[in-house]
Image 1 (cartoon, one colour):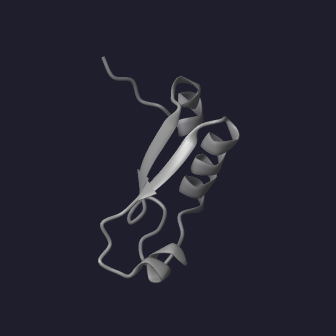
Image 2 (image 1 turned 30 degrees about the horizontal axis):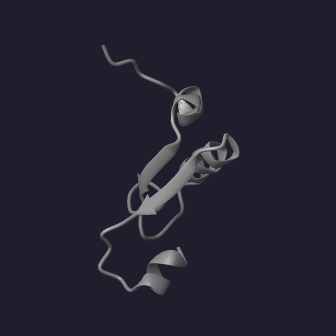
Length: 66
């Protein structure tokens, strides 16, 4: 049975890699979601590799500058 967690930090020790979408997870095109960024930073600090993925039609510099 699935269990609800309050944050990534509760389960990160069980994972080596985190795949995260950018749009809607890290930002919404206007503002950055600070809690998401903090969770991904925490995952890296816990030793996980964090991979950001996107299917954004924008060129790389426009996406990576967000």
